[in-house]
Image (cartoon, rainbow, N blue to C red; front, side, top):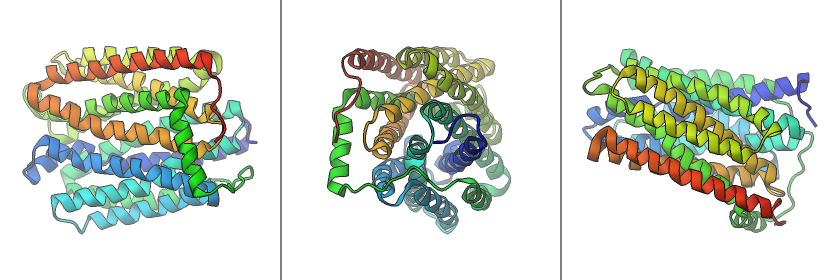
Length: 399
C-alpha cells in the first residue's frame, strides 16, 4: 500500500491530481461562454445551458460503464484511454457549425471525460492506505477546482481574442501534452485484482449501493450540493453581463478565481475527516454555502465576489467529505460506488442548471437566491438523515 508522505505517494497523488485537472479544464471550458453562445446562435439562456448540461449528462451516464470495465481491465488503462480521447473530441468540435451539433459533441466530451473521473478515486482506494486515501481525495478534489478555474478562465479569455475555436484548439493541445505527463508519472497498480464477477453481478452491486442508505443519501447530498454550487456561477455570468455591472466576458469569467476557496477547503477536508465527524463537516459546509448565497445577493461587485468565495469554500468542503464517505464505506465494488456518487453529482449539476437559470429568467436574482436557498435547506435535512442512519448501520451488506 502507498503510505502518506512517501515518494510513491507524492508521485501517484500528483499524477492523479493533474489528470483530474485536465478533465475539469475540458469539462468547464464552455461555461463562461454560455452568454456568447446564446447571442451567437440566437437561443435563450436556458437553451444555451445545453452546452454545459450535455457534457455533464454525457459524463454522468458513462460513469458506471467505465467503472464496470475498470473492474475487469484495471483502473490505469481506463484513465489513460480517457485522457487520449479528450483532445480528439476537442478537435472534432472545431468542425461543427450548428448549435445542436455542438451540443452533441460536448456530450461526447462528457463520455470521454467519464473514464478518468469514474475510476481515479477507486485507484486511490485500491493502492493507498486509509490515512493516505482521505488526504489524497482532498488533494484530488482541489485539482478539480483548479482545473475548473483554469478551464473557465482560459475559455473566457481566449475566446475574447481568438473566438471559441481558438480556446478549444489551445485546450486540446494542452491536454495532449498533459496526457503524456500522466502516463509517465502514474504507477502501475500493484493491489488491483480483476473482478471475476459477471456484469450482471456488478450491476446488482450498484443496486445494493443504492439500497444502502448511508451510501445513497450521501450521493444525493453530493448531487444537490453541486446543483447549487456550479449553477450559481453560470447564472452569475449572465448577471454580470447585464446592468448594473455590464462587464465583458473576459472580465466576468474572472469570477471563477473564487474557486480557489474550494481548493483550500477540499484539502482541509481530509484532515477534518481523520479527526472529526464527516456529518458535522457536511452540515457546516452547507451552512457556509448558504451564507455565501445570501452575501452574493447584495447588488455590489465586491459582495458578489465575497459571496462566491464563501459558496465555493462551503460547497467543496461538503463535496470532499461526501465523496470520501462513499469511497470508505463501500465494502465491495468501490469503483462502481464512487462512479455512482458522481452520477448523482453530475446529474444534479445538469438539472440544477435548468432550475437556477430558469429562476433567473422568471424572476431575476431574487428568484435565484430563493432557489439556491431551497437546495441548501434540502441538503441540511438529508445530512441529518445520513447521520441518524449511520448510527444504526456502519457497513453495507455484501453484494
